[in-house]
Image (cartoon, rainbow, N blue to C red; front, top):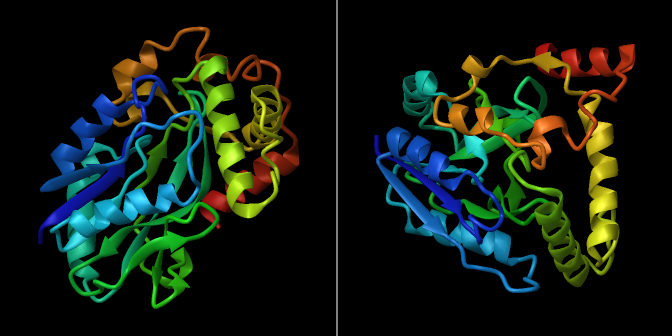
Length: 265
């Protein structure tokens, strides 16, 4: 089996993306890594997200392709499990993984399950054009859903905006809000076109989500590729203390019950 990984990069240094660490992870796991994307100006078109991933998928020559956002990581100790599971499920169009969403290095929530391993050899007509972000996998016009495919109990660690400052996040969220509005003709939950509106809407979402981050992590449980960067977080970065939320968030029984149900049931 030949394994490919495709990802996208857009201004990774100015956005504080952990791209150097991600490339080390991907290059050790896969036989081939394909990177697409371009630097954005003040604005971009929402459909570009899926178009970049589709370009990467089309360029991949592997039997299986894993579509990775630049903040997605696997642990090295799971590499062989991943490869064996893909070989064992060659009749499936995709394989899903649990997503650990991480705001601070010591906690996570099992946010969802991701259909990111795609069987290009046996299902070459897979497209990355589904979902609200227009980059989820579809087959014959139907989105491939995690409960319809084999699930491997190997987590994808997602580091979200953990290394970004408030200024970077504000600019980024405003750019995404304007792109969303241009495509869908509304701002939805994204606040508005200005940096303040977009940041405030994003931070309200973070406040709600962080309450469900009840599962504990120690630094040695993170993928080895990202440990040093996590240990170097500074007070101006989101992941240091979630801009003050780390020590000011109260969790109820509902949050614990829901989070444990998501993970174990």
